[in-house]
Length: 477
Ligand code: GLN
Image (cartoon, rainbow, N blue to C red; front, side):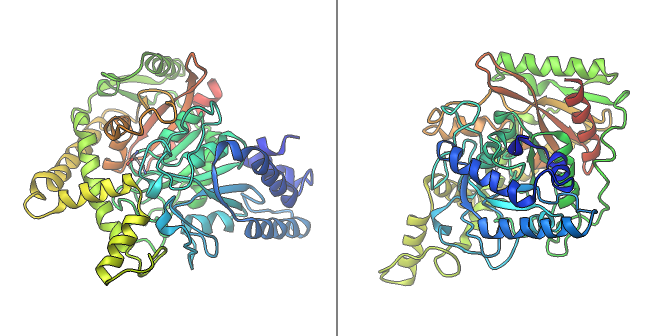
C-alpha cells in the first residue's frame, strides 16, 4: 500500500482495519517530507511532537473503540497563516519569524477534534499577499508537477504538499484566489467557502472582509469531508454564520441532471490562453452531456474587479498590519534611538517589499482627500459586482469558467512586474468581493503537461450544489 497516496477515507479505513497505524502513517509522511521537500519547499515548520502524540492517541482509541472519528489518524497540514498553540507561526514573514502563538485557530481545533494529525505548517506568500509563493520571506515553493514553475499562491505550500503526497489534505486561505489558483496550478481540488461559513478565528488577518479558510485536497469528496468538519458558527468569530451545516458528503451523489449552469462571456475574454479556453469548453460539454442545462449569463462589472479588489484588500491590510509594531508580537530591532525609530526600523526590517507596497497603497487609498475617490469608490464597485452575481443566480444554479487565464508560470517570470501578477487574479477575486463560494477542480492538461483548473461558483451558502456538480464531473472524467 502506498501510504502517502491515500485519500481521507482510505487513510482512515487503513487505520480502522488495522492495515496500518496512525503512528506508522504519520511517520511515513514525515519520511516522505524529509526525502522530497528539500526540492519543493512546501513546509516551513514541522509539528512532530504534536503530530505524533495525536497519532498515538488515535492508535489507543482504535484499540478500545471501533467507532473512530471521521478524520481519525489522517495526516493534514496547515498554511502558516493559521495560529497553532506552541507551534511557531510566521505568516511567511520575518516580522513573525519567532512568533509562538498562545492559542489555536478554530479550523485547526476542529480538524484535530475530528481525529486529524497535524504534520506541520506550510509555506506561503508573506501575509498571504501574492499569487506565486515567491513573496515568502523564507524560500520559494516549486510546483511538484514541474519544478521550474510556481505552485501558485498564496497557499503555494498547501497545494505543493498535497500534489507531492506530503499530506492528505491541507488548509489554505483565500482572500482573492489563494486556495483556488494554487489548486488549479497543481491539479487539485480547492474550495473557498461562503464568507461566514468557516470561522476566521486564529487566521492572521490580511483583508478581513475578504479572508476565508478552506481545504485543498486530491478529491472532491475529501474537500466535502474537510468542509463539513471545519464549517459552522464559532462564538469567537462574530462574522461566522448562525446557520446549520449540511452533510456535504451525503449530498455528493444526488443527481445533477437538470441543474442550470451559467457561462459568463466576461470570463472568456482577452488574456485567456487558448488551451485553457478549450479545456473549459470541453468540460462544459461534459456537463451538458450529464443533462445540465447550459445558460449564457452576464457579469458586466467584471472588468472593474481587479482595481476594486486591490483597493479594498490593501486598505484593509494597511489597517490590519498596523499591529506589527515591535511591541506586541514577533520581531523588535535592537539599538533603536526612540520609540518611533523602533517602530520604523522594525517594520522596515520585518516586512518584505510586496507587503510594504500594499501598506503604502492601502494607506494612500484611505487617507483624507483620497478616501472617496479610491476606497469608497471601490466599495461601490464591490456592491455592483455582488449585484451581477445576484442577477445571474436568478437564472442559474451554478456559474462555471476558468480559474486562471493560464497554467502555472515559471519561477521568476512575473516577480518584477506586480501589475502582471495582479492581473492574473482576474477570475478569482470576484467571488471574494461578493462573498460567494467557489471551487477549482482539475479538468485537463496543457501541451506542456501542466494542470488546468475549472472554477464553479454557487449561491451564498450553497456549497452543496457546487460540490455535487464537481463530484459528478470528477466521476464522469
Ligand atoms: N493573489 C491575490 C493577492 O495577491 C490573492 C491573495 C490571497 O487570496 N490571499 O492579493
